Length: 182
Image 1 (cartoon, helix red, strand yellow):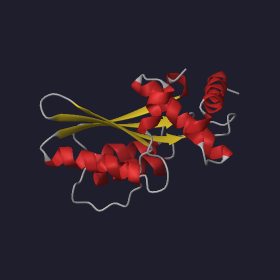
Image 2 (cartoon, helix red, strand yellow):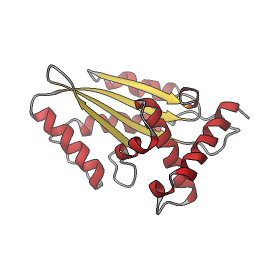
Image 3 (tube, rainbow, N blue to C red):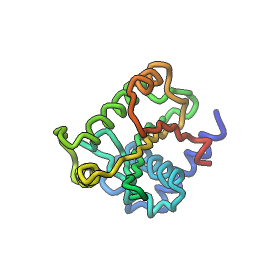
Image 4 (tube, helix red, strand yellow):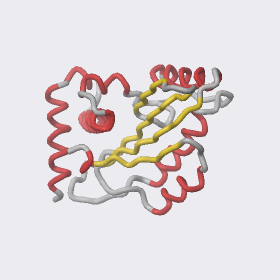
């Protein structure tokens, strides 16, 4: 078994142990997945776990992103970081970030950044999407990073094709996985 995956799993378990209140009303598997998401967001944004929790949107009707971070920048620029997380519970297997999840991420960007698009969202995701769309309607230019968190392998060729065919300006696709969060 990969030592990096074991270390990440230990960190996920420690987050659950130390921050039980963040994961109320979640079943055991869901708690681990959410703790992995929080760990990935905290690592990517270089912040502590308690701060990262506020950016989580994960749940039903989350709009295709599990967390979102927005920062207004200079010169009418809006920096947006969206996260999608896939936690593999099988630590002895190497699975790719699912290509259908990459396709969903591409569709998420199309929908979220189109102020005219209808989308059903949970309250936290709706708040974020409304804020993004408000900035866009005010003339801000969104610079988007879509981070795919995974404790396995990168996406496969099908996933890469979805990304290449998306042709979005000002969009960076990033894979952040276990070796990055150690």
